[in-house]
Amino acid sequence: AQSVTQPDIHITVSEGASLELRCNYSYGATPYLFWYVQSPGQGLQLLLKYFSGDTLVQGIKGFEAEFKRSQSSFNLRKPSVHWSDAAEYFCAVAAYNNNDMRFGAGTRLTVKP
Amino acid sequence: DAGITQSPRHKVTETGTPVTLRCHQTENHRYMYWYRQDPGHGLRLIHYSYGVKDTDKGEVSDGYSVSRSKTEDFLLTLESATSSQTSVYFCAISDPDNYGYTFGSGTRLTVV
Image (cartoon, rainbow over the protein chains, first blue to last red):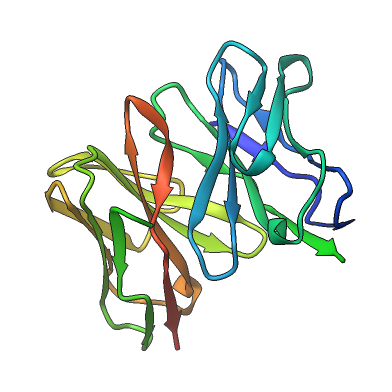
């Protein structure tokens, strides 16, 4: 079955600094990849998704992610972080039928003023 | 989130008692899912449904059962709650033509 690893449990960045959250996946075929964000006490909100085509995908709130097949990675980036970006971020991978989405353990982002 | 609601939002129950959590959607999506979220584990799939009366097991289904008698409702039942089932439970829905799940706000269940 597919799996996801998020190597960083917790990241702290200063407001205005750039951000990169790492995600590595394991899946035998072309994966469907997702990034979700979760604010405290809330459900998960979809930031962006990749199925095929252009390996650089744009999402909401100024986020983007790049699919690199050779590295089995799907890292999330943002050029300039805002204090409101503080949250937990989850990378996820699904098989072609999208019926078994596996999530990473999450990366908690703290933004320093 | 809009179109999907979970009830109750919080529940405390005693070990050995049955518990049912409800997920209700107004989007008419075919697929519905139950996940549990625990620190260090992210979200893990418990059960999912691909239509009325059509369900299947996920990664961590032991101790849980589900039912879907109507498109809009997906019930998760803990037949005999244990402390290891203390968790936050999320329901999600998806549209096969538009990948990516929509999540409910979660139910925090504490088994004492």
